[in-house]
Image 1 (tube, rainbow, N blue to C red):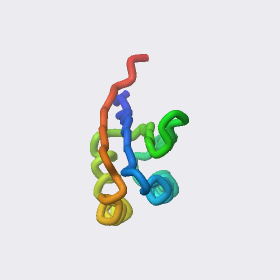
Image 2: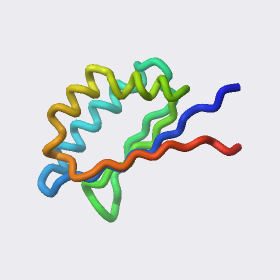
Image 3: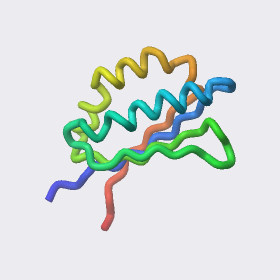
Length: 97
């Protein structure tokens, strides 16, 4: 059985752009379940640092993640969200059990 790909993405908003980024990220949450290779796609916001968002994602494969990253929705989000984002950190994991 092929292992699924676990992705953790940490996205920090620029000051004053928290609400815009939150709304934009929510559009991604609505679309992801319809994409091929989707397993899980959860968005969280830090209690201590509002405007810091964490995605916990599971994809069937690296190919499925690549498809997700190249959808029209992701491209449109990227085109408008640049000014809202201070930083993005993406980490990939494999499940151990």
